[in-house]
Image (cartoon, rainbow, N blue to C red):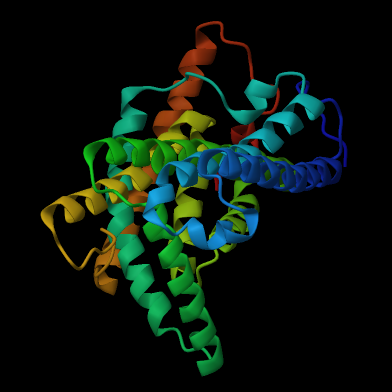
Length: 323
Protein backbone atom coordinates (compact mmCIF):
# COMPACT_ATOMS: atom_id res chain seq x y z
CA UNK A 1 0.00 0.00 0.00
CA UNK A 2 1.35 3.43 -0.97
CA UNK A 3 1.00 6.41 1.35
CA UNK A 4 -0.97 9.31 -0.06
CA UNK A 5 -0.28 12.20 2.34
CA UNK A 6 1.71 15.05 0.87
CA UNK A 7 4.45 14.83 3.48
CA UNK A 8 5.33 11.29 2.41
CA UNK A 9 7.84 10.43 -0.30
CA UNK A 10 5.59 7.46 -1.18
CA UNK A 11 7.50 4.67 0.52
CA UNK A 12 5.16 1.79 1.34
CA UNK A 13 4.39 1.07 4.99
CA UNK A 14 6.19 -2.26 4.74
CA UNK A 15 9.24 -0.52 3.29
CA UNK A 16 9.22 2.03 6.10
CA UNK A 17 9.04 -0.71 8.71
CA UNK A 18 11.87 -2.62 7.04
CA UNK A 19 14.00 0.52 6.84
CA UNK A 20 13.36 1.27 10.51
CA UNK A 21 14.27 -2.27 11.61
CA UNK A 22 17.48 -2.11 9.56
CA UNK A 23 18.36 1.29 11.01
CA UNK A 24 17.72 0.07 14.57
CA UNK A 25 20.02 -2.90 13.90
CA UNK A 26 22.68 -0.56 12.54
CA UNK A 27 22.20 1.78 15.49
CA UNK A 28 22.66 -1.12 17.90
CA UNK A 29 25.94 -2.12 16.24
CA UNK A 30 27.30 1.43 15.98
CA UNK A 31 26.18 2.23 19.53
CA UNK A 32 27.96 -0.86 20.85
CA UNK A 33 31.19 0.04 19.05
CA UNK A 34 31.11 3.63 20.29
CA UNK A 35 30.27 2.42 23.82
CA UNK A 36 33.30 0.12 23.86
CA UNK A 37 35.54 2.97 22.69
CA UNK A 38 34.15 5.26 25.41
CA UNK A 39 34.61 2.52 28.01
CA UNK A 40 38.26 1.96 27.14
CA UNK A 41 39.00 5.71 27.00
CA UNK A 42 37.30 6.46 30.34
CA UNK A 43 38.36 3.41 32.36
CA UNK A 44 41.41 1.88 30.68
CA UNK A 45 39.86 -1.50 31.41
CA UNK A 46 39.78 -4.40 28.91
CA UNK A 47 36.66 -5.18 26.90
CA UNK A 48 36.36 -8.68 28.38
CA UNK A 49 35.96 -7.22 31.87
CA UNK A 50 33.40 -4.64 30.77
CA UNK A 51 30.23 -6.58 31.69
CA UNK A 52 31.37 -7.19 35.27
CA UNK A 53 33.06 -3.82 35.73
CA UNK A 54 29.92 -1.92 34.75
CA UNK A 55 28.31 -3.15 37.99
CA UNK A 56 31.07 -1.53 40.08
CA UNK A 57 30.42 1.96 41.52
CA UNK A 58 33.87 3.33 40.62
CA UNK A 59 32.91 3.23 36.93
CA UNK A 60 29.69 5.18 37.39
CA UNK A 61 30.68 8.01 35.03
CA UNK A 62 31.56 5.60 32.24
CA UNK A 63 28.28 3.75 32.70
CA UNK A 64 26.35 7.02 32.47
CA UNK A 65 28.17 8.01 29.27
CA UNK A 66 27.50 4.62 27.71
CA UNK A 67 23.82 4.85 28.67
CA UNK A 68 23.48 8.14 26.79
CA UNK A 69 25.33 6.89 23.71
CA UNK A 70 23.51 3.56 23.50
CA UNK A 71 20.01 5.05 23.82
CA UNK A 72 20.84 7.77 21.29
CA UNK A 73 22.01 5.32 18.62
CA UNK A 74 19.38 2.67 19.37
CA UNK A 75 16.24 4.78 19.79
CA UNK A 76 16.64 8.33 18.48
CA UNK A 77 18.90 8.19 15.43
CA UNK A 78 17.10 5.37 13.52
CA UNK A 79 13.74 7.18 13.56
CA UNK A 80 15.29 10.51 12.67
CA UNK A 81 17.10 8.96 9.68
CA UNK A 82 13.88 7.15 8.69
CA UNK A 83 12.02 10.47 8.72
CA UNK A 84 14.74 12.05 6.56
CA UNK A 85 14.53 9.22 4.05
CA UNK A 86 10.76 8.76 3.86
CA UNK A 87 9.25 12.20 4.60
CA UNK A 88 9.62 15.68 3.18
CA UNK A 89 9.13 17.24 6.62
CA UNK A 90 10.88 14.91 9.10
CA UNK A 91 10.06 17.05 12.15
CA UNK A 92 6.37 16.97 11.28
CA UNK A 93 6.37 13.17 10.98
CA UNK A 94 8.07 12.77 14.36
CA UNK A 95 5.70 15.22 16.04
CA UNK A 96 8.08 18.05 16.87
CA UNK A 97 5.59 20.88 17.24
CA UNK A 98 4.66 23.41 19.91
CA UNK A 99 0.87 23.09 19.66
CA UNK A 100 0.32 22.61 23.40
CA UNK A 101 -1.97 24.34 25.86
CA UNK A 102 -2.00 24.27 29.66
CA UNK A 103 -5.19 22.16 29.81
CA UNK A 104 -3.49 19.32 27.97
CA UNK A 105 -0.59 19.44 30.42
CA UNK A 106 -2.82 19.49 33.52
CA UNK A 107 -4.95 16.59 32.29
CA UNK A 108 -1.81 14.68 31.39
CA UNK A 109 -0.44 15.24 34.92
CA UNK A 110 -3.66 13.81 36.34
CA UNK A 111 -3.26 10.73 34.15
CA UNK A 112 0.37 10.45 35.27
CA UNK A 113 -0.57 10.42 38.96
CA UNK A 114 -3.19 7.73 38.36
CA UNK A 115 -0.70 5.64 36.39
CA UNK A 116 1.15 4.68 39.58
CA UNK A 117 -1.75 2.91 41.36
CA UNK A 118 -2.66 1.25 38.05
CA UNK A 119 0.95 0.10 37.63
CA UNK A 120 1.08 -1.18 41.20
CA UNK A 121 -2.10 -3.21 40.76
CA UNK A 122 -0.87 -4.65 37.46
CA UNK A 123 2.45 -5.59 39.08
CA UNK A 124 0.54 -7.52 41.75
CA UNK A 125 -1.60 -9.16 39.06
CA UNK A 126 1.52 -10.13 37.11
CA UNK A 127 2.86 -11.93 40.18
CA UNK A 128 -0.21 -14.14 40.66
CA UNK A 129 -0.59 -15.24 37.04
CA UNK A 130 0.21 -18.98 37.14
CA UNK A 131 3.25 -20.05 35.11
CA UNK A 132 5.35 -23.26 35.09
CA UNK A 133 7.90 -23.51 37.91
CA UNK A 134 10.81 -23.72 35.47
CA UNK A 135 9.66 -20.50 33.83
CA UNK A 136 9.28 -18.78 37.19
CA UNK A 137 12.82 -19.76 38.18
CA UNK A 138 14.24 -18.49 34.88
CA UNK A 139 12.29 -15.22 35.10
CA UNK A 140 13.49 -14.62 38.68
CA UNK A 141 17.11 -15.11 37.61
CA UNK A 142 16.57 -12.58 34.82
CA UNK A 143 14.94 -10.16 37.27
CA UNK A 144 17.86 -10.46 39.71
CA UNK A 145 20.36 -9.81 36.91
CA UNK A 146 18.34 -6.83 35.72
CA UNK A 147 18.09 -5.50 39.30
CA UNK A 148 21.89 -5.68 39.65
CA UNK A 149 22.34 -3.70 36.43
CA UNK A 150 19.80 -1.10 37.54
CA UNK A 151 21.47 -0.80 40.95
CA UNK A 152 24.74 0.08 39.23
CA UNK A 153 23.00 2.51 36.92
CA UNK A 154 20.93 4.19 39.62
CA UNK A 155 23.68 4.66 42.23
CA UNK A 156 22.28 7.91 43.63
CA UNK A 157 24.24 8.81 46.77
CA UNK A 158 24.64 12.56 46.23
CA UNK A 159 22.69 15.50 44.82
CA UNK A 160 24.95 15.88 41.73
CA UNK A 161 24.38 12.20 40.93
CA UNK A 162 20.65 12.73 41.41
CA UNK A 163 20.69 15.48 38.76
CA UNK A 164 22.78 13.31 36.44
CA UNK A 165 20.35 10.42 36.93
CA UNK A 166 17.37 12.66 36.19
CA UNK A 167 18.97 13.56 32.87
CA UNK A 168 20.49 10.21 31.89
CA UNK A 169 17.78 7.88 33.25
CA UNK A 170 14.76 10.18 33.18
CA UNK A 171 14.98 12.86 30.50
CA UNK A 172 17.00 11.32 27.65
CA UNK A 173 15.42 7.84 27.67
CA UNK A 174 12.02 9.51 27.98
CA UNK A 175 12.66 11.51 24.81
CA UNK A 176 14.62 8.92 22.83
CA UNK A 177 12.26 6.01 23.59
CA UNK A 178 9.20 8.08 22.73
CA UNK A 179 10.73 9.03 19.40
CA UNK A 180 11.45 5.37 18.65
CA UNK A 181 8.26 3.73 19.87
CA UNK A 182 5.60 6.40 19.43
CA UNK A 183 6.94 8.64 16.63
CA UNK A 184 8.52 5.69 14.82
CA UNK A 185 6.85 2.32 15.29
CA UNK A 186 3.39 3.51 16.36
CA UNK A 187 3.33 6.21 13.69
CA UNK A 188 4.01 3.69 10.92
CA UNK A 189 1.42 1.20 12.17
CA UNK A 190 -1.20 3.92 12.71
CA UNK A 191 -0.87 4.93 9.08
CA UNK A 192 -0.73 1.30 7.98
CA UNK A 193 -3.92 0.24 9.79
CA UNK A 194 -5.61 3.65 9.43
CA UNK A 195 -6.41 3.88 13.13
CA UNK A 196 -4.68 3.95 16.49
CA UNK A 197 -5.67 0.88 18.48
CA UNK A 198 -3.88 -1.94 16.68
CA UNK A 199 -0.85 0.33 16.33
CA UNK A 200 -0.83 1.24 20.02
CA UNK A 201 -1.27 -2.37 21.16
CA UNK A 202 1.51 -3.71 18.91
CA UNK A 203 3.85 -0.89 19.92
CA UNK A 204 3.08 -1.35 23.62
CA UNK A 205 3.84 -5.08 23.42
CA UNK A 206 7.18 -4.34 21.73
CA UNK A 207 7.87 -1.55 24.25
CA UNK A 208 7.29 -3.93 27.16
CA UNK A 209 9.28 -6.81 25.65
CA UNK A 210 12.29 -4.57 25.05
CA UNK A 211 12.57 -3.97 28.81
CA UNK A 212 13.06 -7.74 29.32
CA UNK A 213 11.04 -8.13 32.52
CA UNK A 214 8.28 -10.73 32.81
CA UNK A 215 7.09 -9.42 36.19
CA UNK A 216 6.96 -5.91 34.79
CA UNK A 217 5.33 -6.84 31.48
CA UNK A 218 1.78 -5.69 32.29
CA UNK A 219 3.06 -2.49 33.91
CA UNK A 220 5.08 -1.46 30.88
CA UNK A 221 2.37 -2.58 28.47
CA UNK A 222 -0.13 -0.31 30.24
CA UNK A 223 2.42 2.51 30.28
CA UNK A 224 2.94 2.00 26.55
CA UNK A 225 -0.80 2.25 25.89
CA UNK A 226 -1.07 5.45 27.93
CA UNK A 227 1.94 7.02 26.22
CA UNK A 228 0.57 5.92 22.86
CA UNK A 229 -2.76 7.63 23.51
CA UNK A 230 -1.06 10.82 24.70
CA UNK A 231 0.97 10.94 21.49
CA UNK A 232 -1.92 9.98 19.22
CA UNK A 233 -4.47 12.46 20.54
CA UNK A 234 -2.01 15.35 20.92
CA UNK A 235 0.01 14.61 17.76
CA UNK A 236 2.92 15.97 19.78
CA UNK A 237 6.04 14.04 20.76
CA UNK A 238 6.92 16.60 23.45
CA UNK A 239 3.86 15.73 25.54
CA UNK A 240 4.46 11.98 25.53
CA UNK A 241 8.17 12.59 26.17
CA UNK A 242 7.30 14.86 29.10
CA UNK A 243 4.99 12.18 30.50
CA UNK A 244 7.71 9.53 30.13
CA UNK A 245 10.33 11.79 31.72
CA UNK A 246 8.11 12.59 34.70
CA UNK A 247 7.25 8.90 35.15
CA UNK A 248 10.95 7.98 35.20
CA UNK A 249 11.95 11.09 37.12
CA UNK A 250 9.49 10.52 39.97
CA UNK A 251 10.93 7.04 40.48
CA UNK A 252 14.50 8.38 40.40
CA UNK A 253 13.48 11.03 42.94
CA UNK A 254 11.91 8.39 45.19
CA UNK A 255 15.08 6.29 45.05
CA UNK A 256 17.18 9.34 45.91
CA UNK A 257 14.90 10.13 48.85
CA UNK A 258 15.15 6.53 50.09
CA UNK A 259 18.95 6.61 49.75
CA UNK A 260 19.58 9.84 51.65
CA UNK A 261 17.11 8.79 54.36
CA UNK A 262 19.02 5.54 54.90
CA UNK A 263 16.01 3.34 54.17
CA UNK A 264 17.03 -0.27 53.63
CA UNK A 265 13.93 -1.33 51.70
CA UNK A 266 13.94 0.77 48.55
CA UNK A 267 10.82 0.03 46.50
CA UNK A 268 9.39 1.56 43.37
CA UNK A 269 6.72 4.13 44.15
CA UNK A 270 4.06 2.24 42.20
CA UNK A 271 4.39 -0.96 44.26
CA UNK A 272 1.89 -2.36 46.78
CA UNK A 273 -1.37 -1.06 45.34
CA UNK A 274 -4.37 -3.40 45.64
CA UNK A 275 -6.33 -4.49 42.58
CA UNK A 276 -9.33 -2.34 43.49
CA UNK A 277 -7.09 0.75 43.44
CA UNK A 278 -5.95 -0.19 39.96
CA UNK A 279 -9.53 -0.59 38.75
CA UNK A 280 -10.50 2.80 40.21
CA UNK A 281 -7.43 4.41 38.64
CA UNK A 282 -8.26 2.87 35.26
CA UNK A 283 -11.80 4.29 35.32
CA UNK A 284 -10.46 7.76 36.13
CA UNK A 285 -7.75 7.47 33.47
CA UNK A 286 -10.38 6.67 30.84
CA UNK A 287 -12.41 9.71 31.92
CA UNK A 288 -9.35 11.96 31.77
CA UNK A 289 -8.41 10.65 28.34
CA UNK A 290 -11.88 11.58 27.07
CA UNK A 291 -11.22 15.11 28.30
CA UNK A 292 -7.67 15.04 26.91
CA UNK A 293 -8.98 14.02 23.48
CA UNK A 294 -11.54 16.85 23.46
CA UNK A 295 -8.98 19.42 24.57
CA UNK A 296 -6.41 18.22 22.03
CA UNK A 297 -8.90 18.35 19.14
CA UNK A 298 -9.96 21.86 20.15
CA UNK A 299 -6.31 22.92 20.30
CA UNK A 300 -5.64 21.51 16.83
CA UNK A 301 -8.73 23.27 15.45
CA UNK A 302 -7.71 26.55 17.10
CA UNK A 303 -4.21 26.42 15.65
CA UNK A 304 -5.54 25.61 12.18
CA UNK A 305 -8.03 28.44 12.54
CA UNK A 306 -5.11 30.82 13.01
CA UNK A 307 -3.89 30.12 9.48
CA UNK A 308 -1.86 27.12 10.54
CA UNK A 309 -1.36 24.77 7.54
CA UNK A 310 -3.79 21.86 7.36
CA UNK A 311 -2.25 18.52 8.33
CA UNK A 312 -1.54 16.37 5.30
CA UNK A 313 -2.39 13.20 7.17
CA UNK A 314 -4.96 13.93 9.86
CA UNK A 315 -5.69 10.74 11.82
CA UNK A 316 -8.58 12.33 13.68
CA UNK A 317 -10.72 12.52 10.53
CA UNK A 318 -10.79 8.75 10.19
CA UNK A 319 -13.91 6.93 11.46
CA UNK A 320 -11.76 4.31 13.21
CA UNK A 321 -10.03 7.05 15.17
CA UNK A 322 -13.26 8.47 16.53
CA UNK A 323 -14.49 5.33 18.26
